[in-house]
Amino acid sequence: MSEHIATVAWKRTSPGFTYETYNRSYEVAFDGGARLKGSASPAFGGEAEGVDPEESFVAALSSCHMLTFLAIAARKRLVVDSYTDEAVGRMEKNEAGRTWVSHVTLRPKVVFAGEVSAEDLAHLHESAHKNCFIANSVKTEVVVEG
Image (cartoon, rainbow, N blue to C red; front, side, top):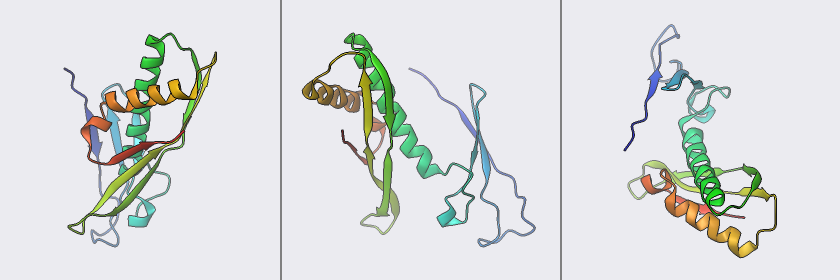
């Protein structure tokens, strides 16, 4: 159906190359021209200014849910004035002892131009989750609160 391209580029800037000393910063270039400074999480020797892969993963789930939600709302002729989500991802070890993002909680706050019942809002989020391309692509548990 479609193809999506991201180019990830890293270059050594450290004098040596050991686990303790190599730089973890990189750049991601997207096919539309946007660029993003990435880095490992500071917990893994990265720089706080860069977006780490785990944050990118959480943001991808959150933004996909939002865009799907907005599309569904628009098709139902519900006018959304704003949407904010403070999504949180949790990492832990799996049965094999490997670290993974096991759980992502989405906490969207939606403001509509008119009245929308709590039940209708819940149905909108359920439908958005069921139809989100990214949520359909991962084994991480994704929970929507709110």
